[in-house]
Length: 348
Image 1 (tube, helix red, strand yellow):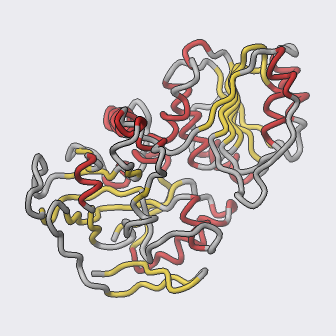
Image 2: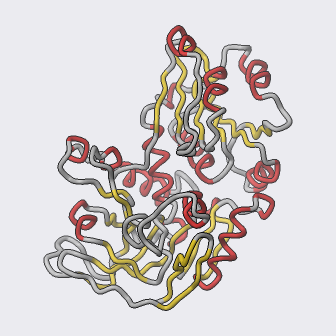
């Protein structure tokens, strides 16, 4: 089979490698599509470590072969793959919160080979956990790749009473910021503003006619003054940080109204994650701060149903398709906001 194989830092080659053979409890999935993620860029650049040469975790495919002792899965059926695999024994895993596994989860495309290949082997621990989630034949494969990132947004937003929100701000105009904003709208937030420093990216969102109320370029507009004018100095109900910029955290706190919510969705660079905060702001304004770390089974079901029903229009978010042979072209295009890419999908 063909696969995009990491040879060394920044070097990916399309090679022919053996098709994996499923052992006891394992499943071989024929990949229909696998999308590029921002984290993939960090891996390919050597900034984030993985244990395997083939990455890709936003996977949809159909079962090609089933190993012995596998039950309740059918050949030729279509599935998306839950990325995170927990220990199955700790209190969090027993509550099906594998993304908060106390022993530290492992993941498809990180500790197990991923979906930038014609086939991907689903290990027994993932099959046993139920990481293969069925999707209907009516769901386009490219849209199916959005289930994983949307599930992460559902998870992060679970802490926020969106139906009560008058105004939500999302920092970051990439696909994750967009999905957070679309989910906030779906759950009842009356106004959603996307903030980014790239005018090209904001222009793309405007061109795609996404249902956001404001697109603000914070490199030319003082976002704190803008929020004061927009809200009569009361602040916004919630801020979601979908960009790995730690200085946004104290700024976001200053944007919040009393009892407002801050979601630190994006992970920060591990080499420099610490920042000073005015804790009295949190104390006296009774602010709510939340983290967001991947997702678990329940969030996948919610994301799947939103995309299958069309409540969130996934097709409008996919701007580019590439064959596996053109994987490096896709990676290069995703790096440049001026190229007009929001979501890039690889079709093996």
